[in-house]
Image (cartoon, rainbow, N blue to C red; front, side, top):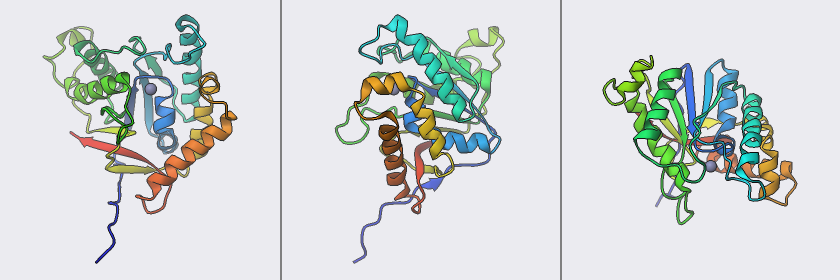
Amino acid sequence: MTEPTTPQLTPMPEDWRRALAVVAHPDDLEYGCSAAIAAWTDAGREVAYVLATRGEAGIDTLAPAECAPLREREQRASAAVVGVSTVEFLDHRDGVIEYGPALRRDIAAAIRRHRPELVITLNHRDTWGGVAWNTPDHVAVGRAVLDAAGDAGNRWIFPELTERGLQPWDGVRWVAVAGSATPTHAADASAGLERAVASLLEHRAYIEALTDEEPETYVRGFLTEVARSVGERFGGTPAVAFELFAR
Ligand SMILES: [Zn+2]
């Protein structure tokens, strides 16, 4: 009998120039996949970030009105560390993002503005695997991103976008979902891991409220362990996993 082997992950596609990452909160990309983003921007690819909220409900000790501008600043600094200078906010309300046409339209508009071939988002499924329940914002935004990749190319679904001068963009070839319990693909994280650590560390106020551990120890430990465990399915190379939906 042969030993059961875990199926290996396929390398992410390389034949693209522009990516757009759309997630619910500041820090979603830094926990999910910024090591891959650092490597992509190093290679001269353009990556832009769109955040559905400003993460204003994310810090227990800080009221939303003070929290929103702080987390926006942290997100912009954290994007800059991995070579991303475009960061936009859709201003949905943190914690109660509603899946529906309004969210799909806002994301479709962002896709039309940026015209990416690759769209990145965070786990849209009910759980992170097993019984680790996901949050409603991630589920709503992830699903809406998968849908909006198609909506962006259809001139009749949100005609008001065309009236605003946003022409249909049917060029999205893949939606890559980070944090999925059922990944299919992976990107080498070795070159980007140090910057991923620095990038997540920019969310300092959030992390200090989250854990008593020393922030750098916590961040480095977390990201290194995730990359190592994905690497078990990627030839031993530390990696970031994605579930890739081709269009
Ligand atoms: Zn989140």
